Image (cartoon, rainbow, N blue to C red):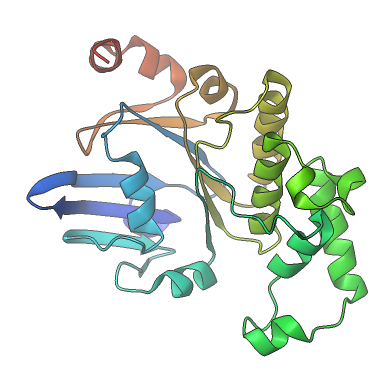
Length: 248
């Protein structure tokens, strides 16, 4: 077992109970720097709860969550974001009536207080960064479009871009390709493989074809515990995984 200081993120003995039901049960999970980890498992396995715990939306009942060797389980959501953890939920939360450019610009980290957000200057640094991110998320030629006119997949990319512009060290995505076309899924896989060059990404996903195209390691959750962990080959050949999935 490697020392927990070697990991970007370490969850140890993490348990959370809702009315006596253990949604996450004595879970250990370790994410390396520059790793793309996919978490899979049947409904009710605790996947989204794990992301909620990491980003501070849900408080753990017991255990420890360390990010860069600092305990973060007692911090508020906003403090966790500032530490460098970004989270995208299943439904895109973008500013529909603003353009793609403005959505990205608003997410650019600066001073963080409202006054700063209202009265900043659109500096060349911001414009350059917005263009750079727009290029990554396949929206370079859509910068002046109102976000509400984008396709579902493009809205998902825009929200990923709004997180990327904040340059998080850990990016967590909940079912990023749900509702996407086949070509959008392929592009999303390419995008995720690009963005892990200097950060770690944790993805919850049901689409196994997509998982195969991106995962370094896969963690299978079942009833709030890790059932199996490893590369795709190991997951495919594990009889318990087949049983859990075929049983659903």
